[in-house]
Image (cartoon, rainbow, N blue to C red; front, top):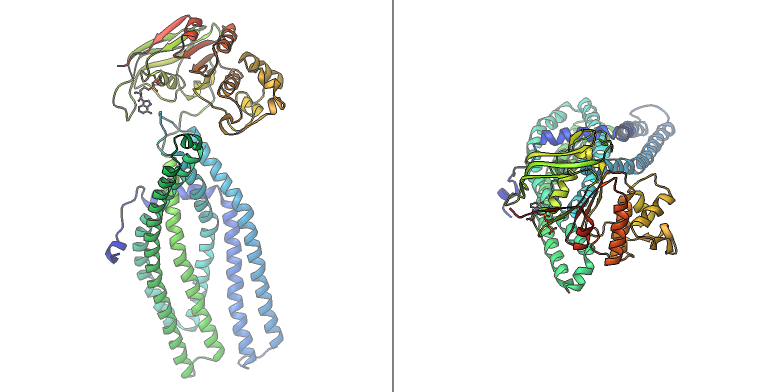
Length: 559
Ligand SMILES: Nc1ncnc2c1ncn2[C@@H]1O[C@H](COP(=O)(O)OP(=O)(O)OP(=O)(O)O)[C@@H](O)[C@H]1O
């Protein structure tokens, strides 16, 4: 690889200033741990510097340069060693216990932010990528904020302390070190730029590997039936090989940089040694002084080495923060108290001249669309595939917004409100397919209403024609695996309907919600649902049996 190529700095998405501002906000949530770590680090520095002095003192006493008790001098050395032990035990405790708390807090914050943001009809990132960011990038950022940064403080303090000690012994050498600092800054700037892009590539590839793994595991039954086990393993190998390639490039650059750095350190130590030896030869430095001098040079090189080790960590955190900032790119939905529309005289939904096209879509899905789902009505929404039925449901639930025109929820009192995330509380929605989560049936039903009693749940299950739950050996406590595993599609669908019925909304929205039911169960379910005519009902369906139960039909046409 050409050295010129190694040093090339590519552009990054966010300016460093914006990333640092983001990190500063994140740090404010983890102050306690960071401050504790910093305090422990500084105590460690104090103990370390005192032990340099104690060693010099003991050697000077032993070589009669200074008077005093040798035993007391060695005992003092012991005390500082013990202090060092104490500090390191305390910092392991703080790191492990408070560290996991800080990580959990940041994960919760990020998840909350993702859930509250706008969705716009399609996720821009693969869920495997999002998970990878929530696990690894959160860990990198938290470790940096709560460990690396406070440790940097102590490393800098140790560096400065040693520097002034050295200055008092040999001003000339200390000044030479200061002169070298700008050179170090320049080299590290080049290094950071290049390393950032290499790290970004590695992290992106790692996300892709996780995405392939997750999708394969999630769909392993489908893959088995398509007999594509080998294809998926090959796909994993292809992404992994890309990851390996990027890791090799980063490692090559990292080794090259550390070779240059270590060469510099080794040369520095030899020069310092020669300098001290010449002074000792000329009797301007004692044996104890020479020992302390070499220890100090090592103690300056130690923190300087540590500072250079911080640079790759700094690079990693810039990359991790950037990837987390991308998770926060989607704007937040309107936040505030839910807007419950009073159900006096029933609640309806009205579309007035609505136009809509997906941002990345090729055509308009709605154009001058008007329809009134009047209070208490039961409407069947029909239409060929791709005509926009699901888009209509998304708009009612305010997951997407009209490009023009008005979509409102209103009641018999004449109050009307623009559909938004705040009006979502008025809807009871049963989506297509199996939407149960892992946990017991009770856990799933509680998602509909956290305060529902067992009686409420059994009542809702009865209305959803899911009385079979009562006959299961564990009843409501029956455990389902992911996506309602252990239940048939039709059983899972009816539990999902019961879950929706437990929600207290005035408008019920069913998106192909009876597709897995046999005709008899479907008829009983529809009769139960329509017995409650206080609610407005919207069925998106292809099934004629459903249409027979509805009093109105909305036919969606392809534009
Ligand atoms: N997130 C999206 N981005 C871009 N285009 C989309 C998006 N979601 C849907 N579409 C397009 O919008 C059109 C309407 O889709 P929609 O899902 O609303 O149809 P549908 O009537 O519900 O179809 P089906 O009966 O097959 O469920 C389709 O042409 C589809 O390709």
